[in-house]
Length: 433
Image 1 (cartoon, rainbow, N blue to C red):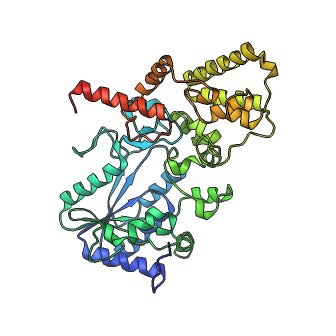
Image 2: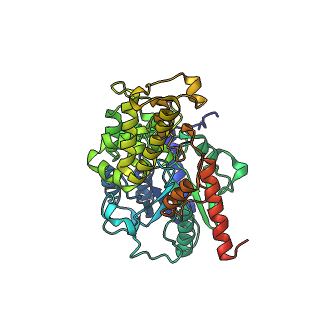
């Protein structure tokens, strides 16, 4: 896809869009995350609002598991003088957990897990105990919330309402499509950098055509405030183009989850204990266990040591799951000892790859690969699904029954069938068809 170019520089274009929005719309708010893009957007809006004698509101969704530097930067942004209302939202919301098959979603600020929260509830925030919105549902999706908020905001204020969103088209194809494909969206007065959100409300993207270099150029030349976490990212070896802020258990973050530990070690332990599978995700975020990158074994370990290391690492976040895998491995070894006379001390680190793939040879590498894949039934070790295994998985799943649905992203066919069966059984009990 070609980059979208303007006849004027992107800073002048962004300021012109902001002036247009403040002129056309009765009420304006900006959705910020504490990241570089939304931070620059709202600080540019502050300059325009000051010049035009306008005020604006800000919406910040606090996902609990945040960098401390991000929270500090949010507090800086709250001091911008032309903000009317700063909606600091710290409500329980369901978020993606890409580091565990057994807990595909987690709920930030879940009151039933308060002892594991990464940090205390922020002062002055909108929480479950003081939430003023009757339409809010505990544990709802973030995407649902922002639409409902826009509807409420318009109903509360009336007139035309606009929400500024700091997305840039060069970050991803999806973001490019949000702006570029006119036929897929309704715009305000044919401005392709706007999208109708709800009746009377529009999203607008004032910096959609900026590059990463433009963001940091603006921070430098305009002396804007910025989130110090990016400086730490840069010092940690992450190039500008790959620096992202997102909740640490999501799809974008899982391929670099170990970075959280490097940047803010004082926060990492709490992040580690907060969500099932995080330590596994941290250790294997660069392996086939969670991504498509070729997995690796540390050079100082042999395959047997690596297998034990994997098993113990799983046990750090789920002891029951570790014991389940341990029992499977023990049976696997016993079978080869009984049928081929291969004892534990005789198991090779590696066997012929074709024989391993055909499940005809035993090796520590074959066992390690099964653990890397978080293969619950251990099919890679020639086990098939049994009633006892299904019952055990059912027990695991009950903990997260509200989140395991047919929409759950999983490549495990047996897990999907189990989810599907549970939904059918649930519908039968409630009389649904």
